[in-house]
Structure formats: C-alpha cells, structure tokens
Picture (tube, protein in one colour):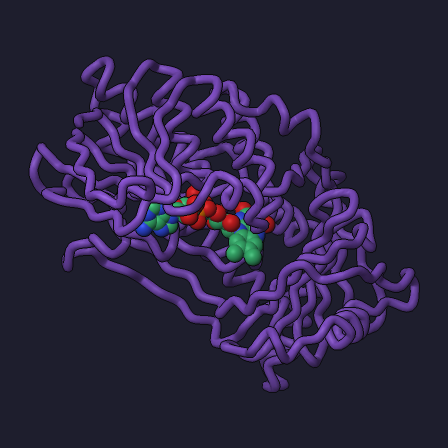
Length: 393
Ligand code: FAD
C-alpha cells in the first residue's frame, strides 16, 4: 500500500502529527508497538505548559484537557526542614496545567482514530525503515494478526517512537548525538494516594532529592534520588515512604499521605539531542529526537512543540507545495530543545547539589536556591523558564 505519511509511534508526538494531518485530509498510517489499552494507561508526564495547551486547542485537540486539567501557579522548595513557596503565577500572571499523559494520549487516539478516521495499527512488531535517502521511502512491519511482513510505501516517515524505537535505530552515521549523563538515578513512583500538597514539591536534602507532583485526585507521582541502576525491588513501600517523608519533611507542613505504590522504576538520568532531526525523508519528533530527564517536566512539551511544527509543515508541503515549514523544521524545534535542556541542567544542580558529597557544590547550590527567594530578577528568570513561553527561542 501507499500513504503520503507513515507515523511510527502513537505517543503524544505521533498522535498529534496524525491528528493535524487528518484535519487537513492528508492520508497517513500510525504504527504502534503497544496495544491501545497499554498506551492509554502508561503513566508518565503530567505537566503541560500554557502555550502547548493553546497549540492543542488551536488544532481542535484541547476540549477534554481544559475541562479536566488542574491549574498550578505555585511550587514549593523544601530544605532545612521548612517549606518555601514560590508563587510563579503571581510573578507572571501565568500557570501550568496538570493533565496526566495517559489522559492526553486517550483523547488524542480517540480523536485520531474514532473521530477523524485515521488509520492505526496497534501491536506491530519489528518495524523497519527503508530507503530514507530516496524520494520513495517505505516502512515494513510484522502484522500482529497474520504474522506476515507488510510494506507501506510513503513520501515521509515521521519518527515519533520515543527513546528506544526503530527511528533512532535507523539513524545514519552522520547523525550527531550529544549526550549528558547526570550519573544519578531517580526512583520514579506512582502512588495511589491523594496529593500531599496543592502544588509541586522539590525536596533538597543532604541524602538526595525527593519530588512530589499531583497527577489526579487519587494519584500522585513521587521521585527519590537513588544510585543509577538501583534495583526497585530494594525499595519496599515502607522504605520508600519513610525516605520520602524524611527528605520532604517540613516542620510547618503536614506529613505525606501514604498509599500503595503502583509503579517503581529506576530512571538513569540522562539527556540527549539528535541533530539535525531530519535525515532524508525521515523526520524525527519528540523523545526520538531528544530526551530530557524529567527534572523540569519538559519532555512532553517538547514533543508537542515538534508535533505542531511537523504536522503543520507536512500539511503545507503536501497540500500547498509550501516547503517553508519543513525546511525550517529542525532548526525551529532545536532552539526550544536546547533552551529546555539548559534549564533542566541548571535546575538539576539545585536538586542534587546538596547531596553530591562535595561541600563546594553544596555551597553553590544553596546560593542558587537562596537567590530565587532574595532576588526578584532571579525569581522572574526562573518563573519564565519554568513555565516556558510561546515566544521565539
Ligand atoms: P513516547 O511517549 O515515548 O511515545 C512513543 C511511542 O512509540 C510509544 O507509544 C511506544 O510504544 C511506541 N514505540 C516505541 N518503539 C516502537 C517501535 N519500534 N515501533 C512502533 N512503535 C514504537 N514530560 C513532561 O513534559 N512533563 C512531565 O512531568 C514528565 N514526567 C515524566 C515522568 C517519567 C517517569 C517519564 C519516563 C517521562 C516523563 N516526561 C515528562 C517525558 C514524557 O513522558 C516524554 O517526553 C513523552 O512521552 C514524549 O512523547 P513522544 O510521543 O515523543 O514519545
């Protein structure tokens, strides 16, 4: 068969591109390794920036989100046994939206497949990309029902299959991959418990970072810094809660609300950026092109930014013969990518400096942290970067 665009991966990036193409009447096929139930439930991100929500709304994809998402205007840094509120909403008049990634993926897949009539194959195996340097690329996969290999010819392949997908595996040698390894792990936890605070908490403790992020009324994400490669089985629930309570302790705040832990995963914290994101007819978007450790909750936002630019660029090219968007695609994405990478690295030093074991780094991390509460200029700069902006990067 033949389609103008094959999209590999049905995450936020791939599904957003698919929705934009379908709205313009462009035929495409989404190939997804997981089942629909799996992608609709996989817990990951939850913080979406205002400009990204506006971008979804402008493409008819924000209905459920604005009705159900929570608005967040403050975060709290906990250190030296006290809570220190940071009112970024008051400083800027702007806010974050909290909307769990599985809800967004559920909305996007419903709109794409059930409303806009987009084609999607779930459970595909062994996806391979071919002839990307020609103007006749193709994608092959094993069909989960028949077990047979299928080949789809196309004009463009949108590589939206995340950090471990077929698109990254198909990158040519000329691809430059810049990588930064933090040398630390985070135990990512999902608790079946109501949030313990009305805002995001960052705990800076000599024994390591701890974080708290609301996901829904009965669901909360927590993070605990741990050695990279640590075994989640060494973290029984009681140990996790005791450690979270210790690192997030504030004498002026109530204790954490405990509950069963539904997910325990150790993330080896690292970032990478693939440049230039376009290789012949393969256009990368989202985590396939760049990973940013969940330090500043930026990954899904970057995936959406790429998807808006890629979807709009493909539509302009395929329906009007206008190449401006596609030609400037990688450069436009990468400016925001590098800006968010830099901010994550900057914030990482605040999170992890106190526990690094080096008194010099602990001293500078404390200075960086104090400055947020003593210098209005530093506070404004933090608020702007933490919120992200629609403006040019
Ligand atoms: P993905 O969501 O990874 O989607 C890729 C899709 O491709 C998947 O459905 C996968 O099954 C499929 N796939 C993979 N390989 C293949 C293949 N070979 N063939 C076909 N399909 C394939 N970001 C934020 O903005 N805010 C946060 O608060 C935040 N918290 C996070 C917490 C955790 C624990 C993690 C792990 C990530 C977090 N992120 C956060 C990052 C965010 O989840 C990702 O950046 C986002 O999912 C990227 O979207 P994507 O569409 O590029 O890739």
